Image 1 (tube, rainbow, N blue to C red):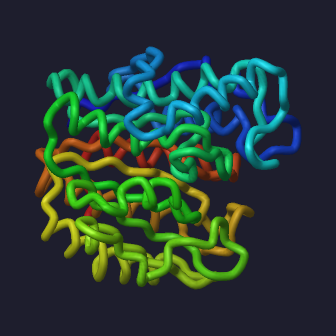
Image 2 (image 1 turned 180 degrees about the vertical axis):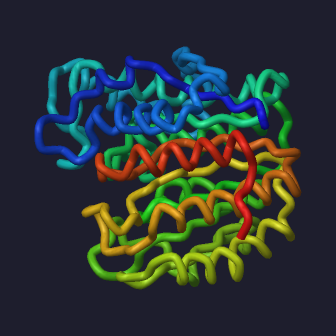
Length: 320
């Protein structure tokens, strides 16, 4: 059994997106219920977030954008940049806290207090661009985490694995010219899947060419398609790259019972995906992996999905 950390902070519930928004505070309560019902709590190391220092957020986001975001919240507006990015008076501070919780998890892993961690934060982050909020996301949590690993702990190569059903456009764009961060995404494309990026030919540019890999899946795809692409695309790419630390953008919205897309991945399929990711972390990164919640909107299925996910972080890969 590994020393697995769980970021649990009720302040993430303060980000109020309104009555009809998919990204609601009940998602975190459902996630926590899944962990509790799985009987895992007593084996986890729970910790709370501390606000991120702004200098770390500035490694990814323009200062003008950060100020514009803060001003929008302070002025009492109810949305920022796009209609799907709903805000309230607590949104800016909660977004800073989301980044800060993940950075604290990194410190604990790097200091040997835990081996890995699951960070169910709000708001999510992988759609956030350098200077624009998108898709429920304001700060790109995983991107800031990657820069923090490199600059604070001199981690040379960071691998990011994004299995949210929507392509992480922000994360890809932030690192597309960088050969020290490998970004891999498996997601629905085409059809109406947001945000429309993440095609196979998008492989990075300049020094970063070849360090972006996308595995688009046609609508209706499920466990079989995901297994094939993970083994064909992700595993060989990371075996070549050999990351020193892995960050997972863990989105569960490709589940067959999630209404946010047209995919048919089962709970067992998600467990298989996470098991292969854990194997990559064990093989190349001394088991160092932090998983960060992105999407996943079925309140019925999220408890079991997160319970299985955390169980794999704690106990290691399932056979398959």
